[in-house]
Image (cartoon, rainbow, N blue to C red):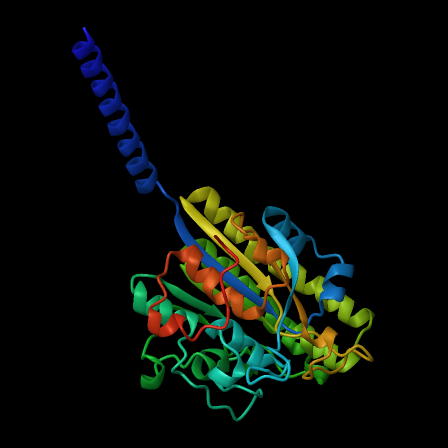
Length: 329
């Protein structure tokens, strides 16, 4: 009798184990395809984005989280990085500070491509991924990322929308760079359209005009309105992501941030290490945020967070140089 009971228990255990394995396999096979888009909206201090009505940012944050973050690296140490645009972009897309990526200003720069950017990492580790960029400037792609350059890994985007700021036929120059608002409109529309139709695996969307307004008007009703307008553009991208998730078995990560704050006196300048210039913000729809997200993350943390979401293994030769850590589990 005891032997028969033991055999039955063994059979039940074996069946349970088999079903568990099959269930786990089925779940793995049914896992949604991870995709990511990060959006840099230029030069918006945290206190401004928190005060102005931004329903798109609010909706993204409601799905995941919102928090203040920092840029500029460790003050007084080799990694201290100017709080200006190109160094901020590079810190995000390489996960390193300026003492590594070597971008300290906006023009006349020589990036150190030994520190792999996020797109080079994606192309190297998962060559099947579709990569996209939607940007005002070509420099983000051709200089900062080094697309097609041997020193930068000789990789290429699959989807490119940029350089519209040089298209005088469509966007004739206006005083105070007001035509950049129209460029941002086009960039956001194209990004939304191609994200919804093509579903690239990793995309960078860059919107510029808020920084132009900040330099011209400082802290002002004009800057507030520019943030409201930016949020309306962002809503197009957010809607496209939501439509993709409804139509396809995809899990989208959306991260929205800015590259620097502004000075506290007028809001017209930035570049130094004051608290307001260093304080940025991150909004994301991720539901897998770690406690680190609520502990003032840094802009360099975005790179490993996106890699984590996309299931990209960061090689040791790259990982050992990173200054950031993932805030996504």
